[in-house]
Figure (spheres, rainbow, N blue to C red):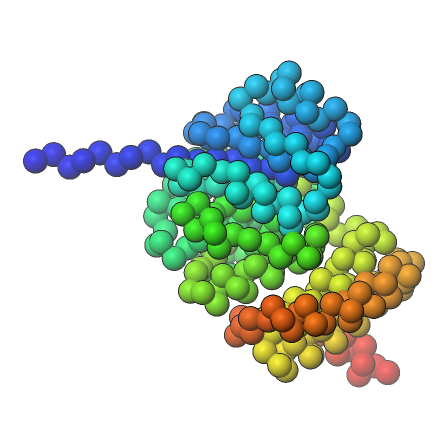
Length: 294
């Protein structure tokens, strides 16, 4: 008897957009040229006012465009995108509106998923930016993923839910710890890359507020008692240092105040994880040197 031919995996591409019509046009042109065509291309839009809807309907009729009635932010916006994917899709590649990808982007992640065990729920890609080279790390299982480039198994779509109270920033770390707690794995695949046209390291009042608040919330929601206390304290120091250097202290203190106001929410929704440790904070050694110098 002949072996039954393996079914071609069904792939979807999803993007969350907000007032970035020209960037989105460049991305969709990349998606259009993929060597393995996605079965669904979905753009969920956070109530843009720059003509995004008209541009997509005119230039990219193959895109399923979903217009939201307001700006729901990154977390809730992506949750709506996750829910919009058809159930018969196998893998979903999520792409930021301001990235560029090569013609084999979809093909590579589909092939990688086919070789991975079912417990691998997310494949995380590498990011290149104008002033920052790629991470140059080896392939392997990791504790986090970057929202600019990731893909997931659609059969676990119910597990793919960002905490909507976060709005934006640290959603990925928060979700990752919960997925790992449930026995899933996240694979870092450095050969699967995107080019991010804008630097994500720029410090603004907006990023200062959300990074301060959400970093603290992440440790309170997901760290064991010692890690929750020390992790949140260290992150408060880290962002105080960054805010003072970038003149965004008012946003820092607002983020700190709102983090404390959200403590009951964090306690109510806690899922302590062995994968969240204050020792993993990248800035910890820098802070300890500063303390010793004083």
